[in-house]
Length: 221
Image 1: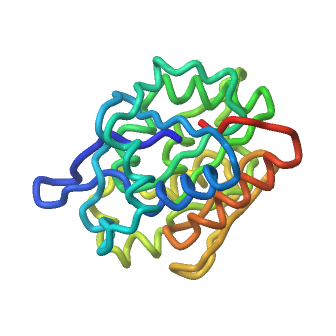
Image 2: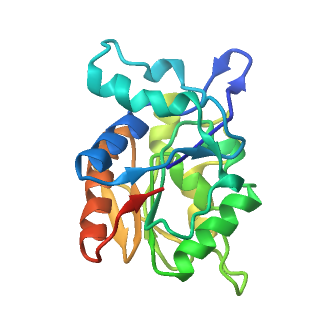
């Protein structure tokens, strides 16, 4: 699981990882018996969007938060043995994931080896900078979803984002499929799995587990 290190939209708007988009999939993967490694581009403590912090400290959530205290730098993770990569969202992902050459390299390797790539909400921002060996966008011709323009406007951040995720995915040649705002919605195109919003986190994770079950696996990155 690769999370953002980016901490603010503006000085008045702290951001980072949207917590449930990490904790819910992390719990699903662990309960399914998978080993999970948590990385970020820089490593260290992952910033959490304060708006996403839970009101209760149940043991399950606390156990899932613990790995965020000390994430591994992605460049130090040997991703070759892993069977899936999962990109949780949060507005922070819109800033640091798209330009990352390291993430792009990892995603290309996963794609070209037929391994599972998954992302939820703003997590698909990590896909927009990834290209295949021929230079074409990783998402070109793929059916995907993510946080929609309508949802971004409803959240009030459409004018603050470096780009609108739905628009950028379409520009890259993806077939973007959006459902009504805040609908639990997942798209799967082969081994590429995307979820639309925070409400889709569990369903996206379960789709990953289903995809992994189609070929024996052991580790989720």
